Amino acid sequence: MAMAQEHGSLQPVPLRDLLGRQTGMYRFANGITDPQASEIIGKCCANATKCLRRIVYPLDATQSLSGPAASKLGHEAGHIAGQENAIPLLCMEACNHIVSVARKVARENFETKAAESSGAE
Image: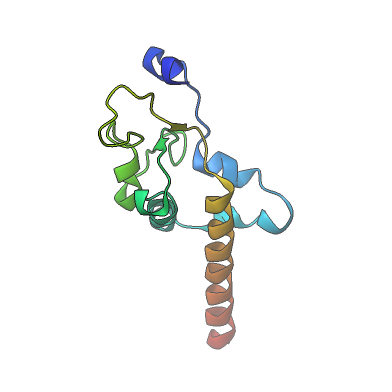
């Protein structure tokens, strides 16, 4: 994977594509906003949570990740201090932890919107 990234042939899966193909109870996970996606990734993928991977996937086909998630995009992400010759761990697509949290946040968004709609009547 590291060689493919160096040669520009790495094909990561955008977050929106991954969330868009979820089925069953996860089918609404794509209902999160872009800032929520960045916040979720920033929390789930933080080095403090023991995730040492460098994110290479974008938010969608035209937009890269930003905000809290941006700290996992640079070349310093995916490296362990003191191990300069190590091959970085690359994250090609969002893991199941992110999808699970996205589902929970999307459900909260839906419930908030439903409560606002019923309160407006």
